[in-house]
Length: 255
Image 1 (spheres, helix red, strand yellow):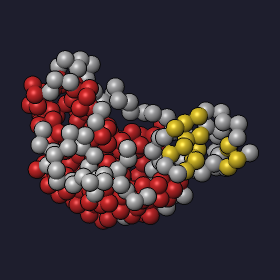
Image 2: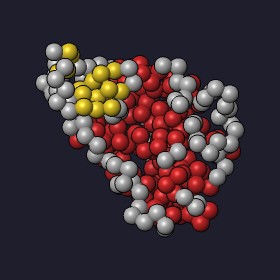
Image 3: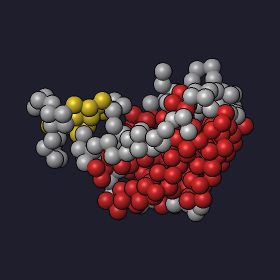
């Protein structure tokens, strides 16, 4: 089941496809605020939640900040980063498991990178240390790492990495987790360590390129019914309510 974003995520993805990055930032902001007000029917963002559905709101803040920077609106990106950090810290009172609080620290670091704020490297180090400290209390790291909160924390780096990688998956789930799940703390801390190494340069790359790819949804290669009017590719990405080119995120045309 999805969170209640009021349709703003679909509008944001369509704006990315049209290269209207400030509009995309606005719609991702609206999606974030809507989800964080009422994540799902009957659920308060301030109640404990093992799934952590509020993560889908937090990741919308991160994407919004990146979109504003691609649009050349750095001041709006900074405001969104500051707003997202404040909200994330407030949620520590609801998501009270130690491993969830480590994930919230990971979000804080992402927001610092996306918003161009100081202290991102230190924030990732804090998140990694929190994962290490939480490790002894986690009996199944795979279960936690596949909850909506943790999946949402991976979504933005995977989306940002798509553009420079010709639309492919450039940052995998395996890249972001340790080799040995039995070493729970290190397994989860790798998320923050890899992001500290890669996310800032990926954000700078898309800002320099002036292009932020849409998220990856359901894909098909060599689709005979569609072609991209921009690059000519027949590789298709179905995401939100849009049918886009897998390579450049342009809306595709039927042939």
